Image: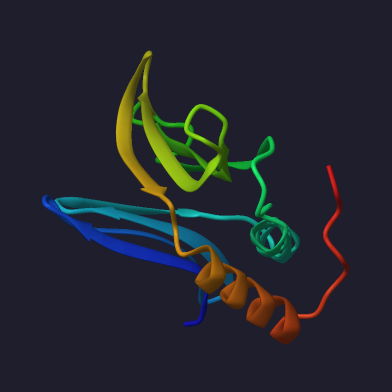
Length: 150
């Protein structure tokens, strides 16, 4: 399974990870904190290409830049125990912190009338050159239509 994006790091709390990878016939985003991990369906191949292009286009100079994806999965659909797990995933430059690059994941769980915060994984100063190399390899090996620009 070759990831399009894989960012792993360690701090005083333990191991962290954000990875977008092919999982059988689909794409998923895997987020891990030291004591908890989860995965959600990422999107179709065109959105994965858009992610790769967003990584390649990450500006070297400080300027406003952010791409965001919304992910979700519903379990036990149309039953009393219907549960929706959703998240946002973003790639960008932080305008409040000298435009440093980041990857950010925040999940939520919705059950009945309640919504609760889930896992938050933020990679500040990711290895941009490594991410660009992964994105370039993906776009080279997975040709398709060019991603649409917003």
